[in-house]
Length: 105
Image (cartoon, rainbow, N blue to C red; front, side, top):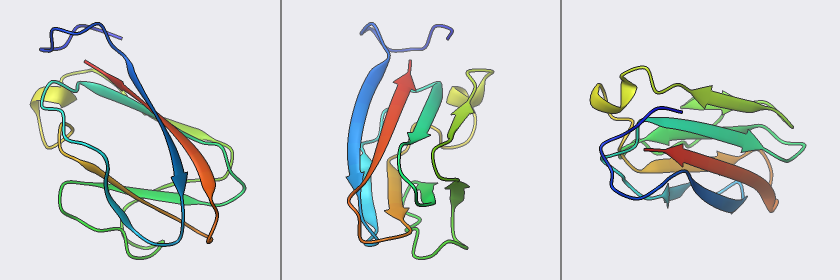
């Protein structure tokens, strides 16, 4: 994926074990982030938000269905909005439910 503002050669990979308790800053803020791929490797829905918005239920945040992924492209989103903010997660069950996050910069 494209070139970001960072100096390190991306992407960064984060391997998360999610539960039904909101995890703030499961992936820390990275102002140089220009794209993301979130892979839900579990049989549960995973919900995520950016910044200080806490995902408290399936109705708050962006849902990633079981065993699927979502990609937020590098088409300028790194310099628009809050893509570089911390990423918060919650899972649909006590888990742990595995999730992989790739950030591009």
